Image (tube, rainbow, N blue to C red; front, side):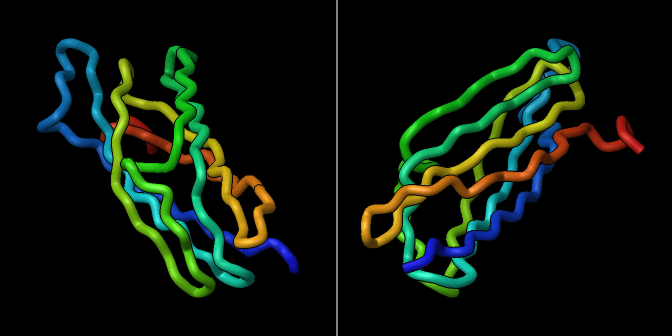
Length: 124
């Protein structure tokens, strides 16, 4: 059986009320939609994020599931969650992949295209 076709959409947002700009703390939330477009169902097993700030400082985040869950996503269905990260600069990027497992035990990576984290007005 072929691997599922998984689409990942991201929606980052600067959160000023959770940030302390004077102290160099910029908090961003991000909403992720993982959709299983076709193929067998699959389970999100783990995540691997690379977060880079404007100074080139890199954070690698590796862990089981997302927001305490390892959801199974059926064909034609989606899983949506919101999380966040803290940067020391007003601009940065996130990218990575999810490790997914099919019903028959085959694992594959679902890539997360790099996306921009920025305070409104800092990037044109």
